[in-house]
Image 1: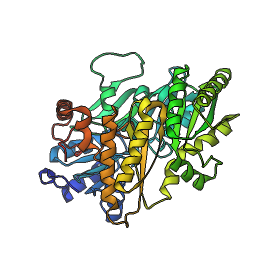
Image 2: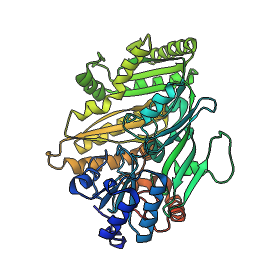
Image 3: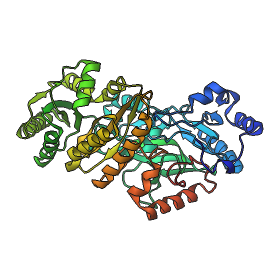
Image 4: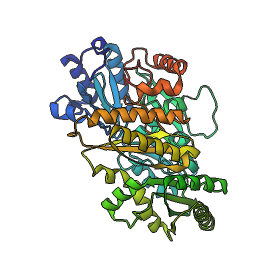
Length: 472
């Protein structure tokens, strides 16, 4: 659905389409129904928005030319990578141009001496990690969608993943950006240095800005030496509250794990039905814990974490003996979403964060909310950093199920805020969570975001309907 401001936008008429073809080449401008429909959705269920035209530029100069034209004609532009966004952040809410950046797919440089890589924005996270690994290096961000998600998309949402507690999120590894302002100027922020404090930190401002301030076309990322060893263990608990106490115990006992993930009992059974991994179906929750580094330290830390879990009532603990066995354990976490997706036609994966000691309380609130609205919600997530993924499985043929799901999601956001948390830990705000942004940030800060948006994008063309735009 288009916003109330849609009448203010310039039209994508035949003249505009012809100019776009002149900029990027006729084969890279799509106006046919099939192509436009394909870009009417991203990975966010319950949201759809149809663009007027799809444009696939092949260079930074072409991106700049498209944006200059869009600003001149006041046509909305929605940047997009692989479309794996889970907050409706890459949907053309007001129509106009969807700017698909997947043709910018070259890895320009990997420098082992400087511990960095320079890539175009359309490179996938897995491709970058694989090329870094060939030189004994690790690209740390590890989002669940890494096989398809692009580095540019990771930067746009400041993506996280399974290594967040020990290593942080995408912004911790972005050294510099090449970006195009909506008015067509090409800027470079940051660079190749870890220490560079000249001027405002526009690199950090653009990282997580969800394509509302500029279009990122090139990213310089920091790499780290690949750890010599990486191993994982699994502990089962009677209830999630027990697992929550074990998380606190692990940290209090002096270990900062590389991995600390949990699944509730609904997820355990869904994963077991899907993948048959031999998980304990009788458990109320499981905790995956792991570390990386030199082998002796990893082995010592795994033993310490196993002891911490046992002290908090774990009914069973298993330590993987090698990397392959560890990957098998982590499969339980990585396949949670596809396992749940088999349960109903629509799967709504959400993303909230709460302080670590309140994880069990938050899961209890989620269960209460789901029961109250008569829907099914399973929860898994990153226990180490308090980032939960409540996931509703919905049959739209069930009368009123979609509306009840939407109401439940709103209540889940409110519950996270009441517990001192946030409406998103790694997926971003997009269009889906914009109505709750002021509840998280306050009216004064939201107004400041709008003024920042206006400074970058005076015509307001870039990804309208998201952060920095008026609330729906």
